[in-house]
Each structure stands twice: as structure tokens, then as C-alpha cells.
Amino acid sequence: MAKGTQKGETVRLGPRLAAGAGFDALYAEGMGLVEEVAGYLDGTGRAEAKELERAVSIVYATESMRLTTRLMQMASWLLLQRAVREGELSSDEARSERHQVTFRRAPQHDRATEFDQLPETLRTLIFRGEALYGRIIKLDTMDRGTLEAPSEKDLPADGIGGQLKRLRAAYEGLKQS
Image (cartoon, rainbow, N blue to C red):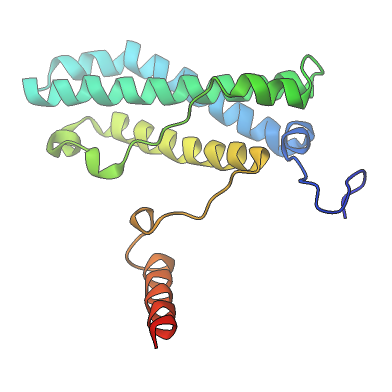
């Protein structure tokens, strides 16, 4: 049992995360990505967007807005964690304020058919942003104690997703016999 906890009490990860060396790397990665995306969208990305066909330019605008929204959510979360680390907020205060940061994952199947025609740099930034966003969502949900098992639609058909589906089907078959 962790020091200072009672049996059955949930251990909050937020204070441990903010105090750990791993947070420095996560914070640097997140804020670095915010700066990199801003620089790209204001510079090279702007020039690349002007050269796109109309349908692709609409997808460019949509995807860049999604990306910047995710990055702002991540930056808000990271700044709250840093405030906890520096003693500006208690972990309970940060957790309360964090309710205002709404994490929503954009489903992969929502990608427009023109997505593959976007500039490679933008696609790479989107994938990096999604990966970091996913990590932060996991940390946030673990901190809140609300981590749920992924639904079958979120699991890949191959690998562990396929294995879990087969296990569930076998278990259902056993229950019915």
C-alpha cells in the first residue's frame, strides 16, 4: 500500500506525475509541438495551403483547426500540471479546474478522402499531435480514476484487439451453453 493511503483509497497520479522527471519531458514535448505547429501553419504551411485544390484546402483548414484545438487542450492540461508542480495549485484544485478541459478524440474514420493529399508535414504533425493527445488523455483519466476499458470499435482488428474479440466471443459461447 502506498504511503499515506488507506486500504481501498484511490491513489492519485497527478501529484506523482507533476513531481516526476517524466513530466519535464512530456511538458517539453507538448509545448515544443505547439511551437512547431504554430511555426509551420504561419510559414511553410500557409504557402503549401495556397497551392492546394479547393476540396483539399477545405480539408487542410478543418484538420489544422482540429490539430490546434487538440494542442490548446494539451497545453492547458500541461500548464495545470506545472502549476501543481510549482505549488501554485493543489492537485484537487487542478483536478477541479481541469473539468473545463474537455478531451475529445476525433474518430479515425472521420478523415476525408482528401486527407492523403494534404502536405506530408501537416499529416506528420497531425499524427504526432494525436499520439501525444492520446497519452495525455490516458494520464488524465488515470489521474481521475476513470480509466475504462476500450470499446471493441476502438481496438484494431489484428493484434490484441482481434484476440480480445475472440476471447469475448468464446466467453459468450460458454455462458450460453
